[in-house]
Image 1 (cartoon, helix red, strand yellow):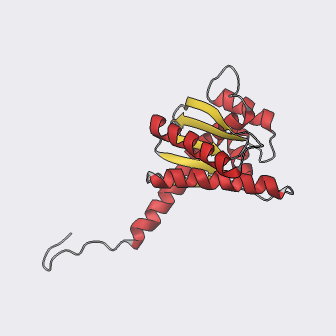
Image 2 (cartoon, helix red, strand yellow):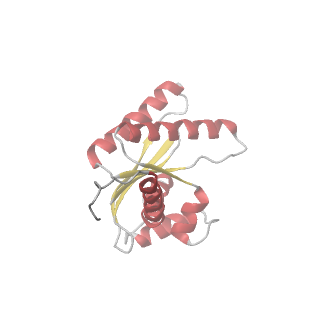
Length: 182
């Protein structure tokens, strides 16, 4: 499975793609960021984020997208920008019919480090260790996006199987003609 992780932000939107599966070694495909100038107009910034995400989706062809769930902060401006960048990532994935899963920051931290309160340095160190890299992806936003992809591979599989089972249970099974046994 190829997972595209997105750590949404307007100044730096972290992007990371990881290949692997539960119980299998994981491999970093690519990590980076889309940067926008803080003094640019919001429409130009969101368009730049959208173009960067679209380019990655076209080039790397992931199976699904994992986006960090926006959480409340004291700085409303930061929350708004993060939510807007998150929505752009979700729309880009939806345009391609890719499944999107949202993961909370503490869920990602716990999956990658074992602690929901890990700091950025701990996340980066564990991402490097899990992927057998010499150093964490830079900047930290890229490492966070890779951590989202890892979290999704390790935790998202069970969530996706459960959702598929629920959907299958809701779908009526085809009826056999009378006199036939199944």
